[in-house]
Amino acid sequence: MTETPAPLTGLRFSKGHGTGNDFVLVADPDGERDIAPEQVAQLCDRHRGIGGDGLIRAVRSVHLPEGAALLEQNPGAEWFMDYRNGDGSLSEMCGNGVRVFVHFLIDQGLAALAEGEALTIGTRGGVKVVARTENGYRVDMGPWEFIFPAQAQERGMDSLVDAAGLDVARPALSVSMGNPHTVVALADLAELDGTVLTVAPSVTPIPPYGTNVEFAVPAEPLVTDDVGNITMRVHERGVGETLSCGTGACAAAAATRFWAGSDAPDLWAVAVPGGTVGVRFFPGPDGREHVELSGPAAIVAEGVLA
Image (cartoon, rainbow, N blue to C red):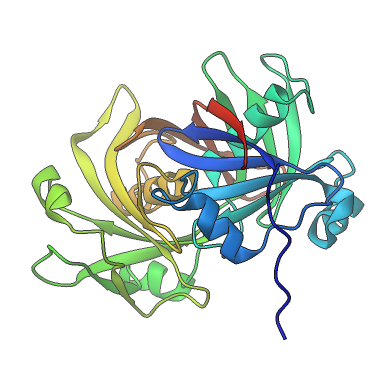
């Protein structure tokens, strides 16, 4: 028999976003407030709830099994970003979400971070280091990798994606940023605008845990002042189309850079419906290539559930 979750009456929350990717945020430092998947879905409902692409709970890492495991190797990761998709399902990571999460910690007085300083955060996609900048935050998202490396290296693609509004299924490349992404390159902005994302695209073969799907249009010219430029839309697992996806922007830049060849730049500007984020590739301390995501974060409202 399934237990009825405790009501959320009196729960304090904030609403925040990063380039339009929006979240309900809850501070639960001691891990005392379990929020059931159906309650997450209710809170994220845009008509009957607060509305958001997902819910982020701020918990000290020691109070979650996943966080405690990370603390063994990363004792500085005091805070864990417990992130749920808008349908209540767990998600490994969210690049826009982790910026908003750190901004929320500062706003709530749970952390202090001056410009240029960094905070180590635990997530289900591993530890992320978030630094405050003049205009927002930058995040070392860790290494990227192909989900199907043999197919990617041999053919430059590993799957086919079919979406409403496209005349035929398109070749795609699947990239892991700690969570899965499948990137499709389209010919122009008109084709991007005509792609219908109210229905989840079909991906064949689909990665083992599902995938987010990015549709990207390279700029013409692709590179200006040593910065690559692409425009992107995304359908996120458990959410639908969102105005922005940070890990998706990183994946789209990684795929486009791979397709562009060895002369492609390390700096990218990715335009999404909610704004523009920056992506940078650099050698990581573990000997692998890492990806840095930069962009703004904002808290727009606070409230208490009735």
